[in-house]
Length: 568
Image (cartoon, rainbow, N blue to C red; front, side, top):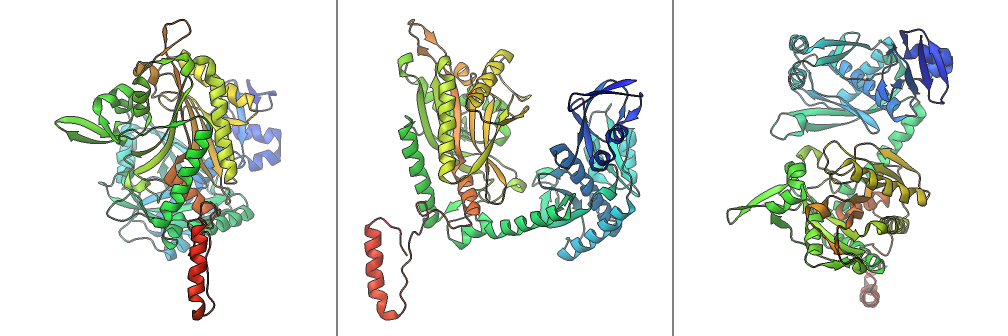
Protein backbone atom coordinates (compact mmCIF):
# COMPACT_ATOMS: atom_id res chain seq x y z
CA UNK A 1 0.00 0.00 0.00
CA UNK A 2 1.03 3.63 -0.56
CA UNK A 3 -0.11 6.66 1.42
CA UNK A 4 -1.33 9.61 -0.63
CA UNK A 5 -1.52 13.03 1.04
CA UNK A 6 -4.11 15.20 -0.70
CA UNK A 7 -4.15 19.00 -0.96
CA UNK A 8 -6.52 19.35 2.02
CA UNK A 9 -4.08 17.42 4.21
CA UNK A 10 -6.11 14.22 4.33
CA UNK A 11 -4.24 10.94 3.83
CA UNK A 12 -5.65 7.99 1.86
CA UNK A 13 -4.18 4.55 1.25
CA UNK A 14 -4.12 2.86 -2.18
CA UNK A 15 -2.62 -0.25 -3.68
CA UNK A 16 0.88 0.20 -5.04
CA UNK A 17 0.62 0.87 -8.79
CA UNK A 18 -2.60 2.90 -8.55
CA UNK A 19 -2.69 5.71 -11.13
CA UNK A 20 -3.43 9.34 -10.36
CA UNK A 21 -6.64 9.08 -12.41
CA UNK A 22 -7.80 6.15 -10.27
CA UNK A 23 -7.23 8.27 -7.17
CA UNK A 24 -9.35 11.05 -8.72
CA UNK A 25 -12.11 8.55 -9.54
CA UNK A 26 -12.06 7.23 -5.96
CA UNK A 27 -12.63 10.76 -4.64
CA UNK A 28 -15.52 11.65 -6.95
CA UNK A 29 -16.68 11.08 -10.52
CA UNK A 30 -17.07 14.84 -10.94
CA UNK A 31 -13.45 15.49 -9.99
CA UNK A 32 -12.26 12.77 -12.37
CA UNK A 33 -14.20 14.44 -15.21
CA UNK A 34 -12.55 17.85 -14.74
CA UNK A 35 -9.06 16.74 -13.66
CA UNK A 36 -6.50 17.45 -16.38
CA UNK A 37 -3.12 16.81 -14.75
CA UNK A 38 -1.63 16.51 -11.27
CA UNK A 39 1.20 17.60 -9.02
CA UNK A 40 2.89 14.58 -7.49
CA UNK A 41 5.42 15.60 -4.85
CA UNK A 42 5.41 19.09 -6.37
CA UNK A 43 6.07 17.95 -9.96
CA UNK A 44 3.35 18.43 -12.60
CA UNK A 45 2.62 15.15 -14.35
CA UNK A 46 0.01 13.17 -16.33
CA UNK A 47 -3.05 11.57 -14.76
CA UNK A 48 -1.71 8.22 -16.00
CA UNK A 49 1.26 8.50 -13.60
CA UNK A 50 1.60 5.43 -11.39
CA UNK A 51 1.96 5.95 -7.62
CA UNK A 52 4.54 3.45 -6.37
CA UNK A 53 5.53 5.19 -3.12
CA UNK A 54 4.07 7.49 -0.48
CA UNK A 55 3.34 10.80 -2.22
CA UNK A 56 1.66 14.17 -1.93
CA UNK A 57 -0.97 14.72 -4.62
CA UNK A 58 -2.72 17.81 -5.94
CA UNK A 59 -5.20 17.22 -8.77
CA UNK A 60 -5.15 20.05 -11.31
CA UNK A 61 -8.19 21.39 -13.15
CA UNK A 62 -8.44 24.16 -15.74
CA UNK A 63 -8.63 26.67 -12.89
CA UNK A 64 -4.95 26.01 -12.10
CA UNK A 65 -1.93 27.13 -14.12
CA UNK A 66 -0.67 23.55 -14.37
CA UNK A 67 -4.05 22.33 -15.60
CA UNK A 68 -4.32 25.08 -18.22
CA UNK A 69 -0.76 24.38 -19.38
CA UNK A 70 -1.37 20.65 -19.90
CA UNK A 71 -4.73 21.32 -21.62
CA UNK A 72 -3.28 23.86 -24.05
CA UNK A 73 -0.16 21.81 -24.64
CA UNK A 74 -2.40 18.99 -25.82
CA UNK A 75 -4.31 21.46 -28.01
CA UNK A 76 -0.96 22.35 -29.60
CA UNK A 77 -0.36 18.67 -30.41
CA UNK A 78 -3.87 18.38 -31.87
CA UNK A 79 -3.12 21.34 -34.14
CA UNK A 80 0.23 19.83 -35.20
CA UNK A 81 -1.48 16.51 -35.96
CA UNK A 82 -4.07 18.34 -38.07
CA UNK A 83 -1.33 20.16 -40.00
CA UNK A 84 0.53 16.89 -40.68
CA UNK A 85 -2.67 15.25 -41.92
CA UNK A 86 -3.43 18.15 -44.28
CA UNK A 87 0.17 19.00 -45.25
CA UNK A 88 2.28 15.82 -44.89
CA UNK A 89 5.44 17.60 -46.07
CA UNK A 90 5.31 20.07 -43.15
CA UNK A 91 8.25 19.75 -40.75
CA UNK A 92 7.62 20.04 -37.00
CA UNK A 93 9.71 22.41 -34.85
CA UNK A 94 8.36 23.26 -31.37
CA UNK A 95 4.87 23.75 -29.98
CA UNK A 96 4.56 24.81 -26.33
CA UNK A 97 1.69 26.08 -24.26
CA UNK A 98 2.06 29.79 -23.49
CA UNK A 99 0.11 32.32 -21.47
CA UNK A 100 -3.47 32.41 -22.83
CA UNK A 101 -2.86 29.76 -25.48
CA UNK A 102 -0.30 27.84 -27.49
CA UNK A 103 1.65 27.91 -30.73
CA UNK A 104 3.46 25.54 -33.05
CA UNK A 105 6.29 26.31 -35.47
CA UNK A 106 6.38 24.58 -38.86
CA UNK A 107 8.63 24.55 -41.90
CA UNK A 108 6.39 24.79 -44.97
CA UNK A 109 7.13 25.37 -48.65
CA UNK A 110 4.11 27.66 -49.02
CA UNK A 111 2.96 30.19 -46.39
CA UNK A 112 -0.15 29.45 -44.37
CA UNK A 113 -3.21 31.57 -45.22
CA UNK A 114 -6.34 32.45 -43.20
CA UNK A 115 -8.16 29.87 -45.32
CA UNK A 116 -5.61 27.26 -44.23
CA UNK A 117 -6.39 28.05 -40.59
CA UNK A 118 -10.06 27.25 -41.24
CA UNK A 119 -9.10 23.88 -42.74
CA UNK A 120 -6.77 23.13 -39.83
CA UNK A 121 -9.47 24.03 -37.29
CA UNK A 122 -11.91 21.67 -39.06
CA UNK A 123 -9.35 18.85 -39.00
CA UNK A 124 -8.70 19.53 -35.31
CA UNK A 125 -12.43 19.01 -34.75
CA UNK A 126 -12.18 15.54 -36.31
CA UNK A 127 -9.21 14.63 -34.11
CA UNK A 128 -11.10 15.79 -31.02
CA UNK A 129 -14.13 13.69 -32.02
CA UNK A 130 -11.86 10.65 -32.37
CA UNK A 131 -11.03 11.13 -28.64
CA UNK A 132 -7.51 9.76 -29.12
CA UNK A 133 -5.65 8.67 -26.00
CA UNK A 134 -2.29 10.35 -25.37
CA UNK A 135 0.29 7.63 -24.74
CA UNK A 136 3.64 8.45 -23.16
CA UNK A 137 6.76 6.45 -23.98
CA UNK A 138 10.54 6.91 -23.82
CA UNK A 139 13.55 5.90 -25.91
CA UNK A 140 17.33 6.00 -25.44
CA UNK A 141 18.91 9.01 -27.16
CA UNK A 142 20.30 7.23 -30.24
CA UNK A 143 17.07 5.27 -30.78
CA UNK A 144 15.16 8.55 -30.49
CA UNK A 145 17.40 10.18 -33.12
CA UNK A 146 16.86 7.25 -35.49
CA UNK A 147 13.10 7.33 -34.83
CA UNK A 148 12.82 11.03 -35.71
CA UNK A 149 15.11 10.63 -38.75
CA UNK A 150 12.82 7.89 -40.05
CA UNK A 151 9.86 10.24 -39.55
CA UNK A 152 11.67 12.96 -41.52
CA UNK A 153 11.73 15.51 -38.68
CA UNK A 154 15.14 17.29 -38.79
CA UNK A 155 14.27 19.89 -36.15
CA UNK A 156 13.37 17.18 -33.65
CA UNK A 157 16.63 15.38 -34.46
CA UNK A 158 18.57 18.58 -33.73
CA UNK A 159 16.80 19.02 -30.38
CA UNK A 160 17.53 15.43 -29.36
CA UNK A 161 21.20 15.67 -30.38
CA UNK A 162 21.56 18.67 -28.04
CA UNK A 163 20.63 16.46 -25.07
CA UNK A 164 23.22 14.43 -23.10
CA UNK A 165 24.19 11.05 -24.59
CA UNK A 166 22.71 9.16 -21.65
CA UNK A 167 19.41 11.08 -21.74
CA UNK A 168 16.15 9.16 -21.91
CA UNK A 169 13.97 10.89 -24.50
CA UNK A 170 10.26 11.41 -23.91
CA UNK A 171 7.54 11.13 -26.58
CA UNK A 172 3.75 11.37 -26.72
CA UNK A 173 1.61 9.50 -29.25
CA UNK A 174 -2.01 10.13 -30.22
CA UNK A 175 -3.37 7.99 -33.04
CA UNK A 176 -1.19 8.46 -36.14
CA UNK A 177 0.79 11.35 -34.61
CA UNK A 178 3.89 11.18 -32.40
CA UNK A 179 5.83 14.14 -31.01
CA UNK A 180 9.01 14.67 -29.04
CA UNK A 181 7.70 16.09 -25.78
CA UNK A 182 8.38 16.15 -22.03
CA UNK A 183 4.68 16.66 -21.27
CA UNK A 184 2.53 16.64 -19.27
CA UNK A 185 -0.66 16.15 -21.29
CA UNK A 186 -4.33 15.55 -20.62
CA UNK A 187 -5.67 11.98 -21.02
CA UNK A 188 -7.27 12.30 -24.47
CA UNK A 189 -7.98 14.70 -27.33
CA UNK A 190 -11.73 14.58 -26.66
CA UNK A 191 -11.45 16.88 -23.65
CA UNK A 192 -10.56 19.90 -25.83
CA UNK A 193 -13.99 21.29 -26.69
CA UNK A 194 -13.49 25.02 -27.30
CA UNK A 195 -10.53 26.16 -29.39
CA UNK A 196 -9.55 28.80 -31.94
CA UNK A 197 -6.52 29.42 -34.16
CA UNK A 198 -5.87 33.12 -33.83
CA UNK A 199 -2.95 34.20 -36.02
CA UNK A 200 0.03 33.34 -38.21
CA UNK A 201 3.50 34.79 -37.76
CA UNK A 202 7.08 34.21 -38.80
CA UNK A 203 9.61 32.92 -36.27
CA UNK A 204 13.28 32.10 -36.70
CA UNK A 205 14.26 28.62 -35.61
CA UNK A 206 15.47 28.91 -32.01
CA UNK A 207 14.91 32.67 -32.15
CA UNK A 208 18.13 33.20 -34.12
CA UNK A 209 17.81 35.40 -37.20
CA UNK A 210 20.68 33.47 -38.82
CA UNK A 211 18.47 30.36 -38.87
CA UNK A 212 15.60 29.48 -41.18
CA UNK A 213 12.36 31.43 -40.88
CA UNK A 214 9.54 29.12 -39.81
CA UNK A 215 5.78 29.67 -39.77
CA UNK A 216 4.14 29.94 -36.39
CA UNK A 217 0.44 29.32 -35.84
CA UNK A 218 -1.00 30.72 -32.60
CA UNK A 219 -4.14 29.40 -30.99
CA UNK A 220 -6.00 29.12 -27.72
CA UNK A 221 -8.26 26.60 -26.03
CA UNK A 222 -10.74 26.59 -23.16
CA UNK A 223 -12.96 24.10 -21.39
CA UNK A 224 -16.07 26.20 -22.08
CA UNK A 225 -17.19 27.94 -25.28
CA UNK A 226 -18.37 30.96 -23.28
CA UNK A 227 -14.83 31.47 -21.96
CA UNK A 228 -13.44 31.17 -25.49
CA UNK A 229 -15.98 33.72 -26.80
CA UNK A 230 -15.01 36.17 -24.05
CA UNK A 231 -11.33 35.70 -24.83
CA UNK A 232 -11.86 36.27 -28.57
CA UNK A 233 -13.77 39.48 -27.77
CA UNK A 234 -10.81 40.67 -25.69
CA UNK A 235 -8.41 39.78 -28.51
CA UNK A 236 -10.43 41.82 -31.02
CA UNK A 237 -10.55 44.71 -28.57
CA UNK A 238 -6.79 44.42 -28.05
CA UNK A 239 -6.24 44.68 -31.82
CA UNK A 240 -8.14 47.98 -31.84
CA UNK A 241 -6.03 49.20 -28.91
CA UNK A 242 -2.67 47.90 -30.21
CA UNK A 243 -0.13 50.58 -29.30
CA UNK A 244 1.75 50.00 -32.56
CA UNK A 245 -1.38 50.90 -34.52
CA UNK A 246 -2.41 53.81 -32.28
CA UNK A 247 1.17 55.09 -32.05
CA UNK A 248 1.15 55.69 -35.80
CA UNK A 249 -2.44 56.94 -36.00
CA UNK A 250 -1.92 59.46 -33.19
CA UNK A 251 1.59 60.30 -34.43
CA UNK A 252 3.18 59.44 -31.08
CA UNK A 253 5.96 56.99 -31.89
CA UNK A 254 7.13 54.52 -34.50
CA UNK A 255 9.79 51.90 -35.12
CA UNK A 256 11.39 52.20 -38.54
CA UNK A 257 13.14 49.53 -40.58
CA UNK A 258 16.41 51.44 -40.24
CA UNK A 259 16.37 50.76 -36.48
CA UNK A 260 14.61 47.51 -35.52
CA UNK A 261 13.98 47.61 -31.78
CA UNK A 262 15.02 51.28 -31.50
CA UNK A 263 11.93 53.52 -31.16
CA UNK A 264 11.44 57.00 -32.61
CA UNK A 265 9.30 59.48 -30.65
CA UNK A 266 7.38 62.16 -32.55
CA UNK A 267 6.53 65.64 -31.11
CA UNK A 268 3.21 64.48 -29.62
CA UNK A 269 4.85 61.37 -28.22
CA UNK A 270 7.51 63.52 -26.59
CA UNK A 271 4.80 65.59 -24.87
CA UNK A 272 3.35 62.41 -23.38
CA UNK A 273 6.79 61.16 -22.42
CA UNK A 274 7.89 64.47 -20.88
CA UNK A 275 4.71 64.73 -18.80
CA UNK A 276 5.34 61.26 -17.38
CA UNK A 277 8.98 62.07 -16.65
CA UNK A 278 8.07 65.41 -15.05
CA UNK A 279 5.52 63.61 -12.85
CA UNK A 280 8.19 61.04 -11.94
CA UNK A 281 10.67 63.77 -10.99
CA UNK A 282 8.18 65.71 -8.86
CA UNK A 283 6.96 62.65 -6.93
CA UNK A 284 10.51 61.43 -6.32
CA UNK A 285 11.60 64.87 -5.13
CA UNK A 286 8.78 64.78 -2.56
CA UNK A 287 10.05 61.39 -1.35
CA UNK A 288 13.62 62.56 -0.82
CA UNK A 289 15.27 61.26 -3.98
CA UNK A 290 18.14 63.05 -5.71
CA UNK A 291 18.43 62.70 -9.49
CA UNK A 292 21.68 61.62 -11.12
CA UNK A 293 22.83 60.90 -14.68
CA UNK A 294 25.46 58.28 -15.52
CA UNK A 295 27.25 57.57 -18.84
CA UNK A 296 25.83 55.24 -21.47
CA UNK A 297 29.24 53.67 -22.21
CA UNK A 298 31.55 52.36 -19.46
CA UNK A 299 34.60 50.13 -19.59
CA UNK A 300 34.68 46.34 -19.40
CA UNK A 301 36.40 46.35 -15.99
CA UNK A 302 33.31 47.93 -14.45
CA UNK A 303 31.01 45.25 -15.88
CA UNK A 304 33.37 42.51 -14.69
CA UNK A 305 33.32 44.03 -11.20
CA UNK A 306 29.52 44.27 -11.16
CA UNK A 307 29.10 40.68 -12.41
CA UNK A 308 27.13 41.72 -15.49
CA UNK A 309 29.90 40.61 -17.85
CA UNK A 310 29.72 37.06 -16.47
CA UNK A 311 25.95 36.85 -16.05
CA UNK A 312 24.59 39.13 -18.79
CA UNK A 313 27.24 39.43 -21.52
CA UNK A 314 25.10 37.89 -24.30
CA UNK A 315 22.57 40.71 -23.88
CA UNK A 316 25.15 43.51 -23.97
CA UNK A 317 26.47 45.59 -26.86
CA UNK A 318 30.24 46.06 -26.70
CA UNK A 319 32.55 48.52 -28.44
CA UNK A 320 36.31 49.10 -28.62
CA UNK A 321 37.66 52.57 -27.77
CA UNK A 322 41.40 53.33 -27.80
CA UNK A 323 42.13 49.59 -27.97
CA UNK A 324 40.17 48.96 -24.75
CA UNK A 325 36.86 47.11 -24.38
CA UNK A 326 33.77 49.06 -23.36
CA UNK A 327 30.08 48.16 -23.12
CA UNK A 328 26.92 50.14 -23.71
CA UNK A 329 25.13 49.85 -20.39
CA UNK A 330 22.27 47.32 -20.17
CA UNK A 331 21.50 48.50 -16.63
CA UNK A 332 22.04 51.68 -14.64
CA UNK A 333 23.14 50.18 -11.33
CA UNK A 334 26.96 50.05 -11.74
CA UNK A 335 26.96 53.77 -12.52
CA UNK A 336 24.95 54.36 -9.36
CA UNK A 337 27.57 52.42 -7.39
CA UNK A 338 30.31 54.73 -8.68
CA UNK A 339 28.33 57.84 -7.73
CA UNK A 340 27.91 56.61 -4.14
CA UNK A 341 31.56 55.52 -3.94
CA UNK A 342 32.92 58.97 -4.89
CA UNK A 343 32.96 60.07 -1.27
CA UNK A 344 32.76 58.58 2.20
CA UNK A 345 29.34 58.76 3.84
CA UNK A 346 28.36 58.91 7.49
CA UNK A 347 25.55 56.77 8.86
CA UNK A 348 23.82 60.12 9.45
CA UNK A 349 23.72 60.63 5.64
CA UNK A 350 21.78 57.40 5.10
CA UNK A 351 19.53 56.47 3.50
CA UNK A 352 20.81 57.95 0.24
CA UNK A 353 18.14 57.74 -2.48
CA UNK A 354 19.50 58.27 -6.00
CA UNK A 355 17.14 58.22 -8.98
CA UNK A 356 18.01 58.08 -12.67
CA UNK A 357 16.03 58.11 -15.90
CA UNK A 358 18.78 56.17 -17.63
CA UNK A 359 18.90 55.04 -21.26
CA UNK A 360 19.94 51.37 -21.46
CA UNK A 361 20.56 49.03 -24.39
CA UNK A 362 19.98 45.28 -24.39
CA UNK A 363 20.36 42.87 -27.27
CA UNK A 364 17.02 41.18 -27.89
CA UNK A 365 16.51 38.58 -30.62
CA UNK A 366 14.57 40.00 -33.55
CA UNK A 367 11.76 37.49 -33.05
CA UNK A 368 11.19 38.79 -29.52
CA UNK A 369 10.82 42.46 -30.51
CA UNK A 370 7.31 43.88 -30.12
CA UNK A 371 6.59 47.59 -30.58
CA UNK A 372 7.50 49.50 -27.42
CA UNK A 373 6.83 46.44 -25.26
CA UNK A 374 10.09 44.70 -26.20
CA UNK A 375 12.81 46.95 -27.59
CA UNK A 376 16.59 47.13 -27.72
CA UNK A 377 16.93 50.54 -26.08
CA UNK A 378 14.73 52.05 -23.41
CA UNK A 379 14.74 54.46 -20.50
CA UNK A 380 14.58 52.75 -17.12
CA UNK A 381 13.40 54.79 -14.13
CA UNK A 382 15.95 53.32 -11.78
CA UNK A 383 16.68 54.37 -8.26
CA UNK A 384 19.27 52.99 -5.89
CA UNK A 385 18.84 53.37 -2.16
CA UNK A 386 21.88 52.92 0.09
CA UNK A 387 21.08 52.29 3.75
CA UNK A 388 22.04 50.70 7.03
CA UNK A 389 20.70 47.19 7.78
CA UNK A 390 18.22 48.55 10.35
CA UNK A 391 16.69 50.85 7.70
CA UNK A 392 15.75 48.04 5.28
CA UNK A 393 12.10 47.59 6.26
CA UNK A 394 11.29 51.31 6.34
CA UNK A 395 12.89 51.85 2.92
CA UNK A 396 11.15 48.85 1.34
CA UNK A 397 7.84 50.08 2.77
CA UNK A 398 8.56 53.55 1.39
CA UNK A 399 9.10 52.16 -2.11
CA UNK A 400 5.95 50.02 -1.88
CA UNK A 401 3.95 53.13 -0.94
CA UNK A 402 5.49 55.14 -3.80
CA UNK A 403 4.69 52.45 -6.38
CA UNK A 404 1.14 52.09 -5.04
CA UNK A 405 0.60 55.87 -5.28
CA UNK A 406 1.90 55.95 -8.87
CA UNK A 407 -0.36 53.16 -10.08
CA UNK A 408 -3.43 54.60 -8.38
CA UNK A 409 -2.95 57.84 -10.34
CA UNK A 410 -3.45 55.85 -13.56
CA UNK A 411 -6.24 53.68 -12.17
CA UNK A 412 -4.28 50.43 -12.28
CA UNK A 413 -4.93 47.43 -10.07
CA UNK A 414 -1.97 45.13 -9.50
CA UNK A 415 -0.82 41.91 -7.90
CA UNK A 416 2.54 41.14 -6.33
CA UNK A 417 5.07 38.32 -6.70
CA UNK A 418 8.15 37.62 -4.59
CA UNK A 419 10.95 36.10 -6.69
CA UNK A 420 13.61 34.00 -4.97
CA UNK A 421 17.19 32.92 -5.71
CA UNK A 422 17.88 31.71 -9.28
CA UNK A 423 20.41 28.99 -10.12
CA UNK A 424 22.78 31.55 -11.67
CA UNK A 425 23.38 33.87 -8.73
CA UNK A 426 25.98 35.50 -6.47
CA UNK A 427 26.28 35.54 -2.69
CA UNK A 428 25.94 33.19 0.27
CA UNK A 429 22.85 31.26 1.35
CA UNK A 430 22.76 33.35 4.53
CA UNK A 431 22.69 36.63 2.58
CA UNK A 432 19.89 35.38 0.33
CA UNK A 433 17.86 34.14 3.28
CA UNK A 434 18.26 37.47 5.12
CA UNK A 435 17.30 39.46 2.02
CA UNK A 436 14.30 37.28 1.18
CA UNK A 437 12.97 37.42 4.75
CA UNK A 438 13.32 41.23 4.74
CA UNK A 439 11.14 41.54 1.62
CA UNK A 440 8.61 39.05 2.99
CA UNK A 441 8.47 40.99 6.26
CA UNK A 442 7.65 44.24 4.46
CA UNK A 443 4.88 42.60 2.41
CA UNK A 444 3.44 40.93 5.51
CA UNK A 445 3.56 44.23 7.41
CA UNK A 446 1.55 45.88 4.61
CA UNK A 447 -0.83 42.87 4.56
CA UNK A 448 -0.22 42.50 0.82
CA UNK A 449 -1.11 39.13 -0.70
CA UNK A 450 1.73 37.80 -2.81
CA UNK A 451 2.78 34.72 -4.73
CA UNK A 452 6.21 33.10 -4.43
CA UNK A 453 7.96 32.90 -7.81
CA UNK A 454 10.69 30.34 -7.12
CA UNK A 455 14.05 30.90 -8.79
CA UNK A 456 13.14 34.09 -10.68
CA UNK A 457 15.10 36.63 -8.63
CA UNK A 458 17.89 38.82 -10.01
CA UNK A 459 21.34 37.22 -9.95
CA UNK A 460 22.31 39.53 -7.06
CA UNK A 461 19.21 39.36 -4.86
CA UNK A 462 15.51 38.55 -4.35
CA UNK A 463 12.86 40.92 -5.66
CA UNK A 464 9.25 42.03 -5.36
CA UNK A 465 7.52 42.41 -8.74
CA UNK A 466 4.37 44.45 -9.35
CA UNK A 467 2.08 43.22 -12.14
CA UNK A 468 -0.39 45.80 -13.47
CA UNK A 469 -3.81 44.78 -14.76
CA UNK A 470 -5.19 46.76 -17.70
CA UNK A 471 -8.78 47.27 -18.87
CA UNK A 472 -8.65 44.02 -20.88
CA UNK A 473 -7.56 42.00 -17.85
CA UNK A 474 -4.01 41.53 -19.15
CA UNK A 475 -1.14 41.79 -16.68
CA UNK A 476 2.17 43.58 -17.20
CA UNK A 477 5.20 43.37 -14.92
CA UNK A 478 6.41 46.94 -14.33
CA UNK A 479 7.56 47.94 -10.86
CA UNK A 480 10.18 45.96 -9.00
CA UNK A 481 12.04 46.18 -5.68
CA UNK A 482 15.33 44.25 -5.48
CA UNK A 483 17.30 43.92 -2.27
CA UNK A 484 21.03 43.60 -2.89
CA UNK A 485 23.88 42.76 -0.54
CA UNK A 486 26.24 41.77 -3.39
CA UNK A 487 26.92 45.01 -5.29
CA UNK A 488 28.04 46.98 -2.19
CA UNK A 489 30.51 44.15 -1.52
CA UNK A 490 31.80 43.97 -5.10
CA UNK A 491 32.25 47.75 -5.27
CA UNK A 492 33.65 48.00 -1.73
CA UNK A 493 31.03 50.58 -0.70
CA UNK A 494 31.26 51.87 2.86
CA UNK A 495 29.78 54.28 5.36
CA UNK A 496 31.16 55.36 8.73
CA UNK A 497 29.03 54.03 11.58
CA UNK A 498 28.44 55.58 15.03
CA UNK A 499 31.48 53.60 16.24
CA UNK A 500 33.73 55.47 13.81
CA UNK A 501 34.40 52.28 11.83
CA UNK A 502 33.59 51.52 8.18
CA UNK A 503 30.50 49.41 7.52
CA UNK A 504 28.95 47.90 4.40
CA UNK A 505 25.64 49.48 3.29
CA UNK A 506 22.69 47.47 2.02
CA UNK A 507 21.19 48.53 -1.30
CA UNK A 508 17.79 48.52 -2.98
CA UNK A 509 17.42 48.59 -6.76
CA UNK A 510 13.92 49.67 -7.76
CA UNK A 511 11.84 50.89 -10.68
CA UNK A 512 8.27 52.20 -10.77
CA UNK A 513 7.43 52.56 -14.46
CA UNK A 514 10.03 49.94 -15.34
CA UNK A 515 10.68 51.04 -18.89
CA UNK A 516 9.23 54.44 -19.82
CA UNK A 517 8.66 53.19 -23.37
CA UNK A 518 6.86 50.07 -22.23
CA UNK A 519 4.75 52.02 -19.75
CA UNK A 520 3.70 54.37 -22.58
CA UNK A 521 2.67 51.31 -24.63
CA UNK A 522 0.63 49.99 -21.69
CA UNK A 523 -1.03 53.39 -21.16
CA UNK A 524 -1.81 53.68 -24.88
CA UNK A 525 -3.60 50.33 -24.90
CA UNK A 526 -5.19 50.77 -21.47
CA UNK A 527 -6.79 54.10 -22.44
CA UNK A 528 -7.16 53.20 -26.16
CA UNK A 529 -5.30 56.43 -26.96
CA UNK A 530 -7.76 58.60 -25.00
CA UNK A 531 -5.21 59.59 -22.34
CA UNK A 532 -6.02 61.43 -19.10
CA UNK A 533 -6.07 65.15 -19.86
CA UNK A 534 -2.95 65.95 -17.81
CA UNK A 535 -0.69 63.75 -19.98
CA UNK A 536 -2.62 64.04 -23.25
CA UNK A 537 -0.56 65.56 -26.11
CA UNK A 538 -3.67 67.49 -27.18
CA UNK A 539 -5.85 68.77 -24.34
CA UNK A 540 -8.31 70.88 -26.33
CA UNK A 541 -9.43 71.27 -29.94
CA UNK A 542 -11.07 74.41 -31.30
CA UNK A 543 -13.36 73.91 -34.29
CA UNK A 544 -14.83 76.62 -36.48
CA UNK A 545 -18.24 75.94 -38.00
CA UNK A 546 -17.73 78.19 -41.02
CA UNK A 547 -14.63 79.73 -42.59
CA UNK A 548 -15.35 83.27 -41.39
CA UNK A 549 -14.88 82.04 -37.79
CA UNK A 550 -11.24 81.03 -38.44
CA UNK A 551 -9.66 84.24 -37.05
CA UNK A 552 -11.64 83.83 -33.82
CA UNK A 553 -10.71 80.12 -33.68
CA UNK A 554 -7.02 81.08 -33.85
CA UNK A 555 -7.54 83.71 -31.14
CA UNK A 556 -9.18 81.14 -28.82
CA UNK A 557 -6.36 78.70 -29.53
CA UNK A 558 -3.75 81.36 -28.63
CA UNK A 559 -5.53 82.18 -25.36
CA UNK A 560 -5.73 78.52 -24.38
CA UNK A 561 -2.06 77.98 -25.25
CA UNK A 562 -1.18 81.04 -23.13
CA UNK A 563 -2.89 79.32 -20.19
CA UNK A 564 -0.69 76.26 -20.72
CA UNK A 565 -3.41 74.17 -22.38
CA UNK A 566 -2.12 72.14 -25.32
CA UNK A 567 -4.46 73.04 -28.16
CA UNK A 568 -5.11 72.25 -31.80
